[in-house]
Image 1 (cartoon, rainbow over the protein chains, first blue to last red):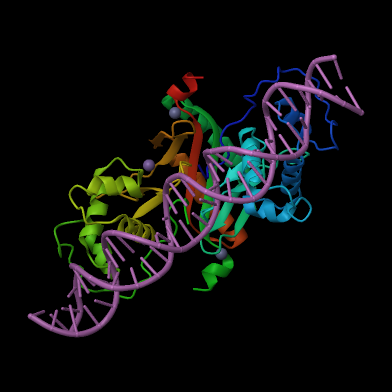
Image 2 (cartoon, protein in one colour):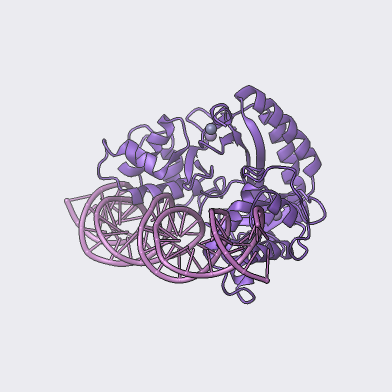
Length: 176
Length: 176
DNA sequence: TTGTTAGTGAAAACCATTTCCATTATAGGC
DNA sequence: GCCTATAATGGAAATGGTTTTCACTAACAA
Ligand SMILES: [Mn+2]
Ligand SMILES: [Mn+2]
Ligand SMILES: [Zn+2]
Ligand SMILES: [Zn+2]
């Protein structure tokens, strides 16, 4: 499965709600609360992955992450990265993105200090991706209405949307 | 490469413009003009593929098309289907879509009698896809403005956009 | 009709992602 | 702090959609 903007949310896991949610049970990560609250174990690999995502400019592929953490955590395998990204995506903590370059890419749904909602502008030639926030408010406004209308009309419980613009970046449209 | 809403257009091919464009050179297909005009040869396979796309409800995968035409054209291979879909997509005659089910899907950019622009509503559970045209006008209006603004600000030559909503269809949200 | 070469099919290669399974390490209960 | 159940892991193998290779075929301009 690949490339929808991060489907699904919430923790479907056991772990009776309302349990002690110490955000300090290991180290200091802001995500530990949510993570533990859903009954997931805190492992070195998961920590490293989340860490690399929050420290990068976003749009990392599984292999990008592997390369980033491998020097420091040589025994975190690619398989674990795929699995963790899947978990995080299901928890709604990261978005799974598809920019058409044949591999899934991921970005944090929101940083430690709140969301920074944006959409994407993708160069179809060199695959450069620009995060933009211009027009976001109007877009989000219209999307909300649309979601509502569509939800009612087609009996869909809409949880997510993807807006992406495709075209040629300056360099690529110049090089003819 | 996979899953962006049909990148690129136009014919980059030789074939000096302004050549005889008989729309009747073989059979009757409405697309022959555009096809031949770009210097592509008209083959049985291409004909069959275009035909199956125009006769179906859309969102066919390469293999779907293969299955559809195989009985009548048993010597059109899957490879040719992939190649043809790529050509058609580059010509802007079809859109390449990604609904997150791990394979590319295709639909005609416009039918024989003009476009029928729509966006998609995708069930993340059963992968059902609804074409909707509601709100399209407002969406397209806003998108046009956004495209313009972004094009200027980021020096992008925007050619295309993707809007998709994800959620659970009636059945899937019911089955808990 | 013929020659040039775009197009083709079958098989093999590709490669991102998933599955398998024996091993390890987290965390709750003591 | 120790023990235990089992969630999590990693390496290797499998998967599966798509692409590449290459010898062969057929479209079409002349
Ligand atoms: Mn982004
Ligand atoms: Mn459609
Ligand atoms: Zn570019
Ligand atoms: Zn469904």
